[in-house]
Length: 328
Image (cartoon, rainbow, N blue to C red):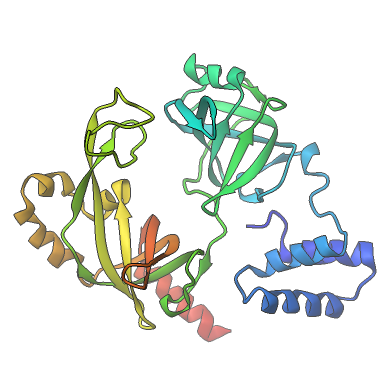
């Protein structure tokens, strides 16, 4: 989501470039066509502004942003939020570089996002228990990156964490901030992130694979994780099913937590697969909204959809959308 509205971006272009509204509209529509409508109107306007040399976000480092204003590439930002969850500090060994990385989930009244810490001094704040759930903190001089379409706040060695800010956060709106395009299944393109909705029309019995209990990655036959050799192997679920939205159907894949969201008695099914039959019947015909990444299964030459988030369809909201479309 762009931090400024479409109208605000257009007004800034008009002010700095003395272009008429119609001239800007032509450029935005051309950009949308160029990118096959894979971005929002606001996103297209932002690109047009950038190409014209209009700096939309030059003053962001001087004020405190809300989570729904985050945009990939923004630097030197300040943000106040309440810690929603804290994750384990992890060690990494990648490209001949070893180190630690810490992360936690932060939220405000507009949404939530992941905060990633790379500096050892910041990581110590997590290790020492100074960053805990429900604590309000302020991050300063951070930057925004996109990971699988989700916005993340990253703190390097130039960033700071204020553990006792003056600002207060009362309510947190749960839900990660992400630029997601709603698409029909027939229009999905491998490699993109999208939101699709439809009806579950076919399900397969869930499978379980050996994974590292610390990082969740699939492990080899020796049941040892290369990064965490002392960790205990655990069985992680993967659930496959087909979704149909009237335009086409596609195979969806749900791992770990998302598999549990769809199958509440998954642990019981792991011990007694015969229990899945009742679950299968209940799932068929149910309607959901899924966000995730479209992949290409080269072996079977088909597109598949890896789930990142699940929402059950609210019939009242769908009816309201239809009414609004009719009114337009």
